Image 1 (cartoon, rainbow, N blue to C red):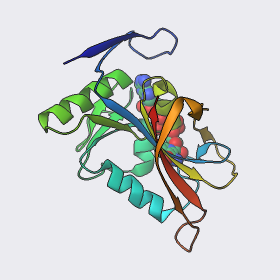
Image 2: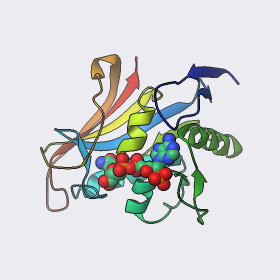
Image 3: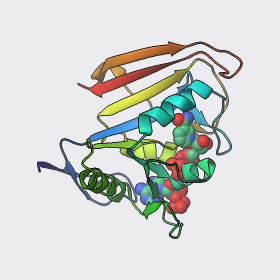
Image 4: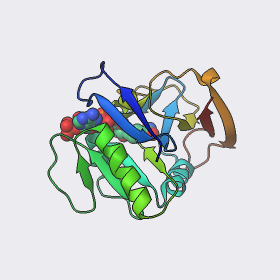
Length: 190
Ligand SMILES: NC(=O)c1ccc[n+]([C@@H]2O[C@H](COP(=O)([O-])OP(=O)(O)OC[C@H]3O[C@@H](n4cnc5c(N)ncnc54)[C@H](OP(=O)(O)O)[C@@H]3O)[C@@H](O)[C@H]2O)c1
């Protein structure tokens, strides 16, 4: 297995070295407003049924990594996925693998993919804390752009998408079950 070593020295609570396979796809799966809001009061700021369906379809049979607050907001382990939660405060919980750092989460996800002979993708599903601290590690972005400007308290970091290649895009119209127009774009790092 080819490995890469990274030295991280600027973000607190990260261990100083990273040892992940270069072949691992590390993705962000996130929905953000025009003003980059992703959450409010530890919840999603919108009702978008089709985006939830997209989330569910994208994550099936994959390891998903989330921060403790996102797990609390979801409220239960999601079926047919390996649920990995990063927390320094949670005890063991059925259906979850709890780890205390992002690099441990990615290593746990890689091991699960290897055990299950799956393609090596680790899907980081939030929230803001996890997206911020993983920004320089991700090589795939699956972004839902929600066409609204709203108030919120958690934001997705600024990303220079000129450094990324758009590989897929689809658009969805507002209707009774989808509060806003939105489009989903998949980007790979150049
Ligand atoms: N729009 C979207 O696509 C989307 C997706 C996901 C979440 N959200 C929203 O985002 C919000 C939650 O995000 P958030 O930023 O408040 O919290 P978060 O990232 O979900 O969770 C933060 C917590 O995760 C743990 N954690 C994360 N990184 C860690 C590390 N390196 N080491 C140790 N612990 C670590 C800590 O838990 P402990 O305090 O237990 O140590 C930390 O307090 C909610 O509003 C949610 O609805 C939106």
